[in-house]
Length: 253
Length: 310
Image (cartoon, rainbow over all chains, first blue to last red; front, side, top):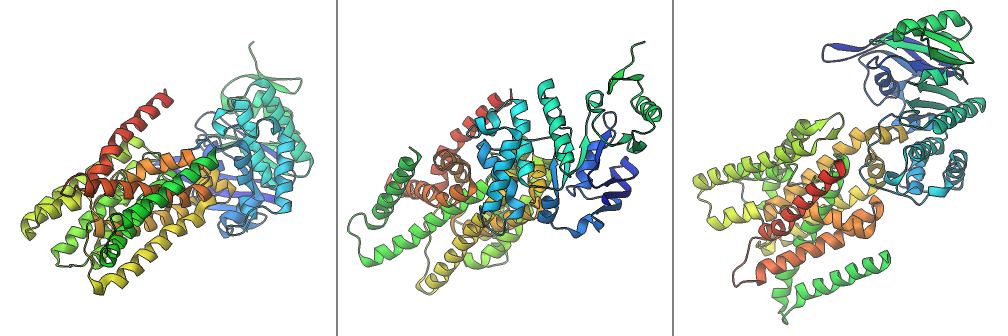
């Protein structure tokens, strides 16, 4: 079952093509990793595929239906997105912040229902953020902030999880924590799409890979043909790599 | 502690309102005159502050307010064009004022927004230029239409000293009532605004359509500001000071913070107006009193932001 389907997606800013004829799909319960050098168009792809930016041409379908046919709330109930940048205007408490995650599930001006409360509690439990629920979101460490932001996404209880560079600015402990959490979420039946810069570390997790360079897809496929996959990574990033104990590392020789 | 502060603001508000209306054993006629002015002060305070508050949220910029983003300036230009084609009553002048306030805010927003949030320096600069443009037009129009100096000062610096004839009184009450309802409808967007304060991306991924909310806010604040400017002229900086002070007392959740602007904004305008009309034997322009507080506060905000960004 194709959960997410992108066909011939094109997007430009001015005359520069940021995305050029990009097509791929994600099946239910799969983890897709999107990687590529800086400026490859990864974040743009996430912004368009999530409906934040308008596409120029091409098709995006979620559960077989055009992206544009969903309302903002419907989209948020299906898809939980963690964007890479986060610039809040005010310093609100962590608890208030996480509670905002249930917005899409509630009606006009209605607030907490029992089920929403459970989603929020579960999200707090999963991300282990109880100790700093009363802190302000601007007073957290990077690792804490990322866990809090993930808690808000989980409170939405989405079936598709899209994380744009979730490991950015995190220490190694939190990087592993995020990857393990995503693995558990996928195991529970969620579909996961991630853009990850630090692919060395994340290499063993995803089911499929999508490599982008200058707005074009350079490779898409699973890990069955491992040599081909490593070769594609080498070509895309213009660096020699070796696969060692599930880590894809730069080759110094 | 917070509850105590809220109670204190509330008591102050009641005391001051009573004082404003009934000071010096006035006759029934005087009370009625004062009541019109009182309502206008309350509306001006609420309108300027709540518009400032929501503009700050949607532009992701704590320095936004109707005066600084060019809404007031645009409205004034429209008002003057209305005068030019010989409209007289503030009610009918509201219409061209509204149209031009939309133009003003559109220009400012387009010039100042870079990748979804507005650049402070561009926002303020464009707003200020629109205001200078508006002042120039005031002086030009003053020449051609023979406006009095008093009128010019009241337009540029604001005043609640208006005369509403008995025939127009009912119409005035209805308009002010509608104005209050329009502003209060912004409170219905509280949760959307809470989310937009976290950034457009965050709001969108949680299920809000930021563009829709922004358009709604721009239109509502333009209508209300245009109406206000047609009656009172430009009153600057209220929308900057009051939201900040109110947030520090009532918290940052829009659902509690936006309604409380009626108290704080109303109180501030009543107090400023009281100073303007009773400090000397003649009446001072209200906007010069609010700017006297507002501009030092503006510099304080800029300094604070500069420290934070380092």
